Length: 304
Image (cartoon, rainbow, N blue to C red; front, side):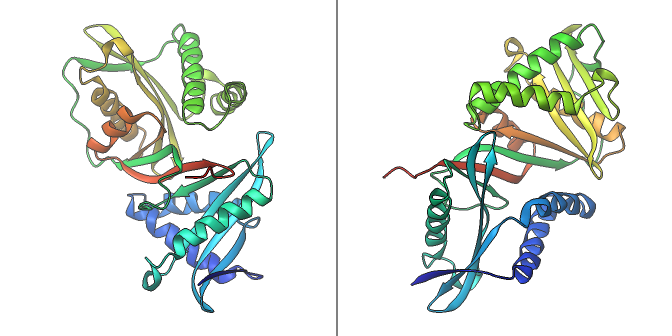
């Protein structure tokens, strides 16, 4: 029978957790320095986690870590870790740990439970909706340009309309992924853009592009260089709806990869929001690997 006991000292668990997380990041293509920077972000909140030892007839078989915290005025839970040792996989401990985590968070008032997966979870979290994926690809050599498509710097005159469009699209992505209400998403969008590009086009280490075909604008791109060591983060590579289905999505990615190399980085990273299956399929076909996948479930879990 599966049991759970909250640890008083998390030191050994944390060492093993960081080892596993570092291995998953490097396996996804991140360099050692970038993987370490990702780990730093995880460590920032790890001290608040409650870690329980998973046992079977008194023998430790794994760990589960949980936390409940305020998220935009509402309580949300998170499964920070759920790991069962290889010798004990497939005996029902994973599902028991998931159920324990859901109950623990629900008892503390959480209306939503999140988990960030760094490896496939099989059917264990099928009932959790995909909120987004972090994807990455190492750019080994300059990509082949797409015939007839060019990229140029965005002008100051083009920036205000682009900013308004990007903020609206960001709000739509957040709402579609089920992360926040529309009103909450608008506030988050305003805060995030003010923090990320306070100087507009002049914000250092950012590239703003306009994609053109036959002299006509067909899309835009926004990239942040040095987001992690040797990693450029693609905040947006957008193709106008009337120009989709013509191969321009690949052209936008090619422009992003060229800008990545030009800035001295070697890896391009994106977040793909849940519900955007077209983008997920495009990134998969282009060789972008999933570094992390964010999923969530409304609590309490509805009866099956």
